[in-house]
Length: 125
Ligand SMILES: [Cu+2]
Image (cartoon, rainbow, N blue to C red; front, top):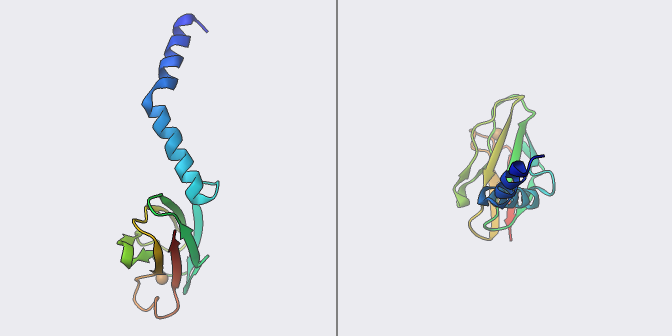
């Protein structure tokens, strides 16, 4: 490597962009328990897992995987959190940041699904 390249490398590693990228990665890991994202399976009529814990102000990254035969979503009305609709045999990456602590109900807003038992609990500490 030429001296010039070293100087470029030093400038790059000092750049705030790298710091932000590292910070984002760190936060993502904390929210997802290491892999960066928590897998949640959606089907008729349940969330698996149906209990999710999070930290207020920290992003929660979910991979929503629909293993059922109709569309589902992941909604927490009290926190204004609503995922896009996930079609059968599809996955969607979905992230949100809980604004406050508490225990909140997760539901699927497709007609009849909440009533059918498609509910869960989000605990924000
Ligand atoms: Cu549903």
